[in-house]
Length: 102
Image (cartoon, rainbow, N blue to C red; front, side, top):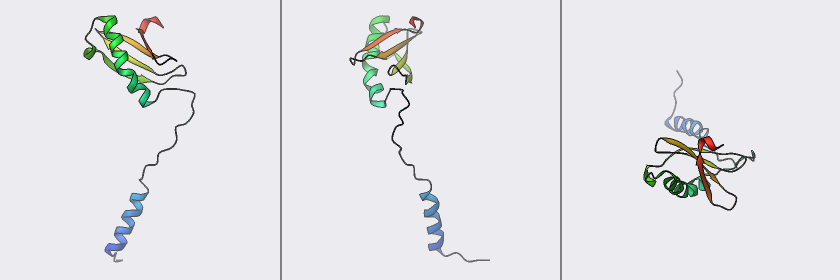
């Protein structure tokens, strides 16, 4: 049976580990918009607008999903048992509307 030295085993382990290093690729241009910073910036104004619309406390407005679209980022919200959509407008403002308004 072949004998393996600790250095040989350590080298093999490092090679195996090197194959597991994650690389970050640049975002692809798929025609959709919606980045993590955009979604994060939308959360407070979307919750505030949904709160005003529904009378629900702002803290009770739940963000259900982040959706990238060709027309801009969208957050789906839940307030008082109903679902709403919050869209980022070209001027940076947001618009909240009922899911049935589409």
